[in-house]
Image 1 (cartoon, rainbow, N blue to C red):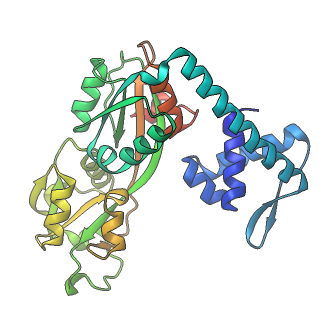
Image 2: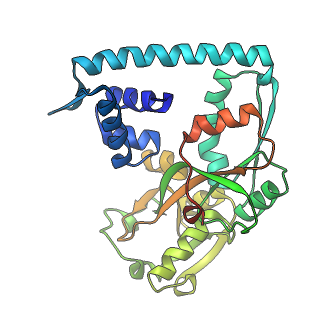
Image 3: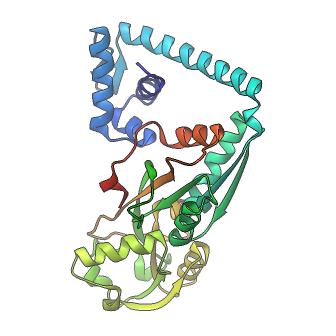
Length: 306
């Protein structure tokens, strides 16, 4: 039994849905279900029951839930006292992140982490994937958080952890031309002005690979511009210069406010946000805490890193 299993069970009870809890915990639904079964097997008792409203704790599950919260609370108090004794909260953690992660995902996590560890200095730098990984390999960063495929030298001794899952969506200006747009294919978009993320960005790498898998390339499209700034891309689309593509995380506010519209496309383009750090380098204790805070305990295998 470990703290992550306790956190998983609490999340399932709080959300009442294993699927929702799995998404919030950045793990697969089968993986979460397996962890719940492991806990139930350990105690030889059913802890969760399915109802028409989702899942609810059984009487034994209510006891487990109550003590799980107490144990985690005591763990946090213990950790803080040890940190204060060793003075590790004053450490500096250098983080490199690609554009989507650095501008939209990590700032909120840093803010929340700083509320828990107010003395730690988290220094964030944002750049393209190639630059971030090279600077990590040169030990300029303690950890790097990137989206999309990454080329890692075979001799590099890096650990990789999954931080979050997202997807690429096509976006259009909120005009009559795109009102009530039916589900379309990539072929339906080849003659539409297209604004692409610049080569080297994680989103562009993922998109290029998806096109190759579909038997297409960017040359098949009417590309009118390539931009490195996500904000510039969104502004250009909103101004009617063309359509584009971003991670859903990067445009969720604009989509909710109808400042941009999503184009429904018959193509699923998943994208992963992953954390890389050295196995053989010095990793400050607070860097380890931050990694655990946003990713949890599980590592990806080498084949999943590429």
